[in-house]
Length: 330
Image (cartoon, rainbow, N blue to C red):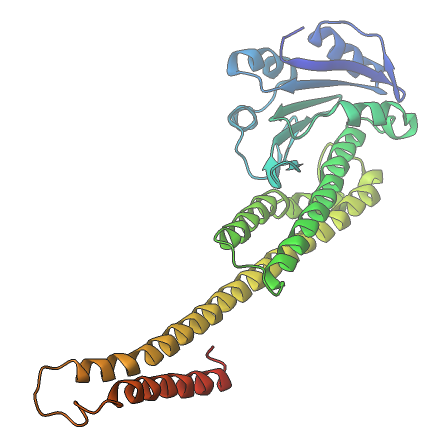
């Protein structure tokens, strides 16, 4: 067995069966049986490692190229001998409050399923165990595998959207708190959150079209009986995408509110600075006038001039302070 093959199994009548270790022999047995299929799972194969699988299952070279390069948009493509589906699972990292994406490629044929996984965001062991515990579902063949994988990916979208909603509520509470939203990193946090939502949208948005096609039941290699199941997945995906759109709009509103708050605070600061500057200007002006070196100035040699001038400056500053206070500048 190739090093990159995480798991390979032959399934007959909805149950895992002992089969040949050689992929060619196992596929031949699955096709001869009529009610069996082979599921091969790979993790980040190189072109050389994937050559053997490509030859055994007669996979289309364009689909193989996409599966090896990764960095693909979610899509569904139909070829003569197989169906090729790309999904982008999302992973929420609670330590950093970040969203990362993996890639999952699924090849569906007459009696086989080949899954190629990139990244750590989409382990399929849990999906395989779930299917093996439900023989009635697994009996539907490769269609059941595609449904289970799509269902698991989309259900996780909803979970991640819920986590992002919690983060947004915390950010919103911080911005709208009476003394909140003043930190230098608040705008950066909002921008980072929008980046996470954008990453999420790139995963879920383009998947809507392929899910609608699968739900319509017009895709080769997919059983007609699976239409209700794919409709359910499509409905969940629409709900997840709606949540993400709402999060994006709310983040834009929060960012606008934060910038408006910053503008108001800056105006308040400018008013305070202007008020204090005006109060300092009055005694500075009076002191400047009396500091000029002229012999003939009013009351220059009167003994009470000094305390009178001090009282006048203090009174003027006090009057300005009351006026600014009444107008809310201080």
